[in-house]
View 1 (tube, rainbow, N blue to C red):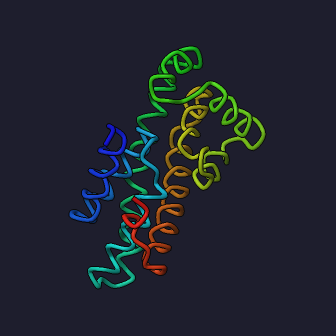
View 2 (view 1 turned 60 degrees about the horizontal axis):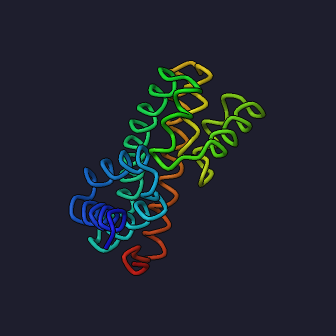
Length: 175
């Protein structure tokens, strides 16, 4: 098992054994370290809610806690991008397996749709992990960034958690 697979397995165990704090930490990690997909974390959390015979209310709670973790991770990325600027981000992006082409795609969305890119970008796989970078580079107002990030992240997290709950599919089945 390579390092990425080991990390993903650790995150899966974290979520199933420590539902709320596990989801928060997993969401924070997956935002800052993109190889851990939210498409794995949140359906698994929904499945854990189902398996533990918890009420559907916990789907919303787990999704919001995940949205908080994602928001905190996004703030970290936003602040780094704000501090480094575009040249600095491009220089260090390769260490995080982010290609300049991906950053350019996020910047194009930002140029086309403005600040709302942060809100809607949180709902687009592949873009959701990157949207904080142009927001920071372009010095988006922090309160608006925070609000749009939280709303978009919670929407994504609740939807995926609900899918795991209602379809009863364990992400572990895929590994």
